[in-house]
Amino acid sequence: MLSEEDSQDFKIEFSVGHVTVRYLKADGSPQKDERCWISRFEGPKSVGGKLKQSGWEVPLRPGKYGLKGWNRLGAFDLLSFEIALGDDKEVVLRSKR
Image (tube, rainbow, N blue to C red; front, side, top):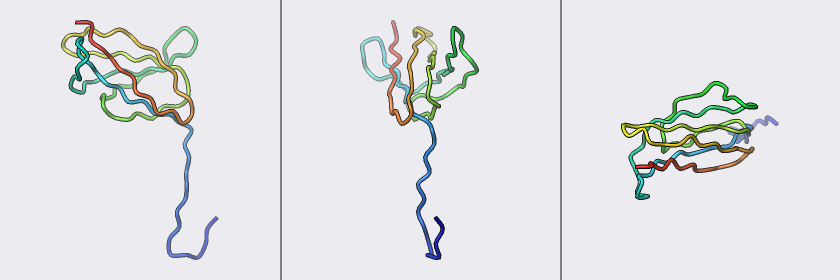
């Protein structure tokens, strides 16, 4: 509701959840932030996708997603995860070597 006050605060909600991607080395120690590919799963296939940087909070619409990581080693399995409205998740890509 608008008023005649000099300033007003409005709360705006977006129907999203958030995911932060982290990379770990095979020994469990943190790895530097790298690129990752996040795509939405709908049925048996993945739809679209976006290249993102790990270490940053990424807003996503509720649903099921696939995550593919890569770097010079290229040794990461494809992960799937779900995001619900208001989620704040961390997904970890751990190197196999």
